[in-house]
Image (cartoon, rainbow, N blue to C red; front, side, top):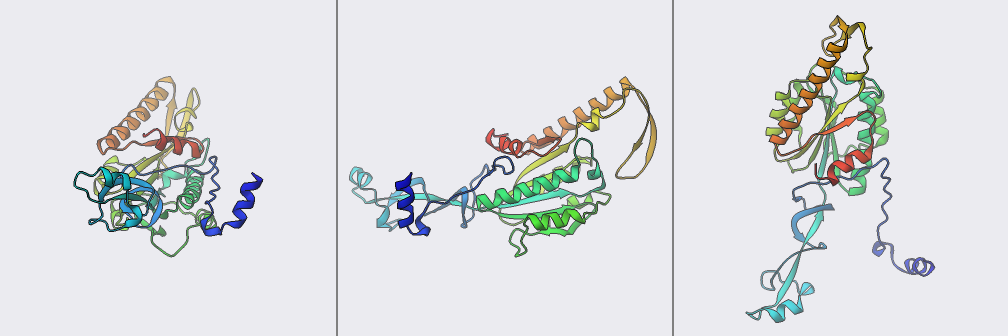
Amino acid sequence: MKLLKNFLLLVPKKFQPLRCNVNLNIDFFYKKRKLARSSIPGGHSSSIRGAGMIFDRLVSLVENPDPRRLDIRASLRDPFEQWRVREFRQKAAIPVLAILDLSASMSFHGEEKNILFLKEFLKSLQRSTQVMGDRMGLIGFDKNVREDWVFKVNQKRILDERKIDDLFKNIKLSKGHSGISRLLSWLPREPGLIFFLSDFHFSLNLFEDFLTNASRHEVVPVVIQDKAEVNGWPLRGISVLSDLESGKKRLVWIGEEWRAKLKESYKKRNTKIRTMCNKHGISPLFMNGRFEAKNVSSYFLTGA
């Protein structure tokens, strides 16, 4: 170890290995299933051939006149006695976008506040994109696209942890979800990775239309749920239900039959979300309770 340290002191910094400080408790791993198309260097496999480390194919020297990458053995074995050159794929950066549901229903809090979940997820994503060398953007919506919550991927405004804290310090939630239908014009042109965070308490037809129109991107639906939505009710008695979107209230008698119907409705809703996502070749990421970065990493590592 001492010899290695002494060696690194003699090596110019630009040639020394990069050190990435990754904390798997607060940061998470993510990737695109399809090859990236960007020419900007990053950490994702791409379709761009260049000065990369991933071997792609052998071509003739005429096709790629780069003598530095001559493959002597392949050239000697070539039946047409041509010089063969190795071509590689380079790693590339991708645009990563977080779309946040800022409707009134997101004010729900049981074991954890939904808004706090959004904040912790966004901070973790911001750190993770820095480690991966990717460009990050943000869009918030309710009945409209919230322009005060728009940070374009290629915009010069920096979305750091301090800015995230400021956004949530002055957060205002409004009724409605129709802003989903206006998101398309705010998406980056380059195919990227989109995290769509919501409790999905709205017409799923809106989200299906979004998936259809945003098909060039890879969308990860992050379904925010809380056990208290189903299990946080008294065993028996009268309770007041309040609709966070409409503000309407009504009295209900809570009993075993009512709780059974509630659990069944949530089960059917989750099945509907899963079926709709599978139709578009993706899987939803159901997150219950507090945000944990390892659950997001597991989603990508298991190929969900």
